Image (tube, rainbow, N blue to C red; front, side, top):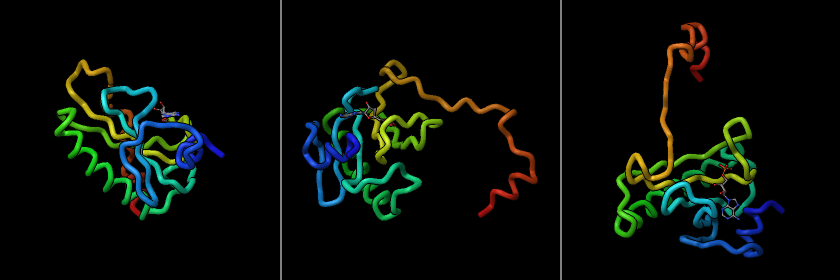
Length: 132
Ligand code: AMP
């Protein structure tokens, strides 16, 4: 059983902030900002590319509710809601989870920025191929 399955089963303790039949949310053990929260499905899937859409939608719904709730308590100025899939993207626990990360200001502990560059632009033929 993976570490998040063990948390979902109550075999490993966590600081729970939400639970229902399908979804659990708890504070990250190594928070990158105050209130850094993980939202997981109780049923195992390796990452969000493997997780049924109804569960992803459900986790998104819980993230929205938690964000509204945290607004009143932690008073952040914004949030990240993201999921790392596979090691190349930085995934370290292979049970799908979404990070809900409150943001306060530029010095809140997280250095996260999209630094786009020309060299990442796709040629028009490849762009066309990407259309599903
Ligand atoms: P990722 O690198 O996207 O797979 O994120 C995994 C996250 O899980 C990290 O932010 C860890 O700090 C967190 N984490 C790992 N083990 C635990 C645990 N037992 N309880 C709470 N958070 C955990």
